[in-house]
Image 1 (cartoon, one colour):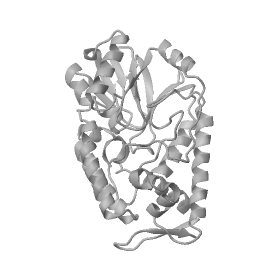
Image 2 (cartoon, rainbow, N blue to C red; image 1 turned 90 degrees about the vertical axis):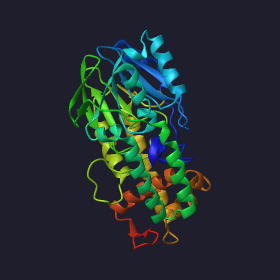
Image 3 (cartoon, rainbow, N blue to C red; image 1 turned 135 degrees about the horizontal axis):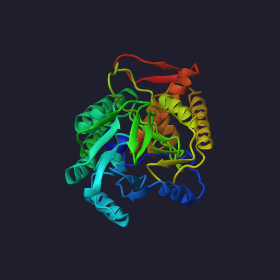
Image 4 (cartoon, helix red, strand yellow; image 1 turned 180 degrees about the vertical axis):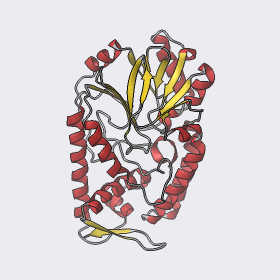
Length: 355
């Protein structure tokens, strides 16, 4: 659903998904500062907490992501820039890593005040330019998905209404620079390679500088919490079949694992300094959860929402779309492994059972 969290104020973690203790970030942040990259945390209205905006010195002065559309976040951004000796009007470019509101929300305000150009993955550009229409379609798709997978109609309708209200956290702006997957983008006087890494969102983008061994990873890879693979409307042409974001996310994680990378600057929390170990941990956690869900299907067929309630209880009611996305993603892994069968009938709730 719309916004940064598909209609629910909490994301990134669920009660039994382990968080992780990372090495102290000071050395990584100091190394980034040596090459002109500075972090400004901005407050968000979401359970994840602050979002990181990265300021890259150079001509043009560049922001990688920009925070949610709120006066509080804008004030924090202006204060952070001032501490670095800059003003908002100095910003010449905003690079967007993905479509969620806490990463793109202030783009319209920044462009209006500074005249900055916007750069992003080419597939993401239509969403940045017309986020309202995309969010509306995404919300409508989510309403249908919830009904098909066992969410009671009054709960699904209520969440759909809340998603409409939360759209004010995002905004839209023209995109001047559209970069294809594998293309290059100049940031801070250096050429960065743009990698499309869908999973957490359809538009997740990693920007990698091989010489400095630094990457901006948005929410694709976070140090302390696992990013949820949220079911979202795909970018570009769509055949109407249910998206499989966790399958895509695992492919993206494996691709990122192969990068020569010393520091990954994520959208929340501290930098990642051991990305290969972290990717291995994330994949293992996903395998463990899939095995648990398979075991839960032993007594007989169940809907995805029914599995979510069995696993998380009340959390699956208060955070319906997050938990539904989590269950469906792991069911897709089991379907691919031939361990689970999906029973689909017209106008009936979809059920899953052990093969």
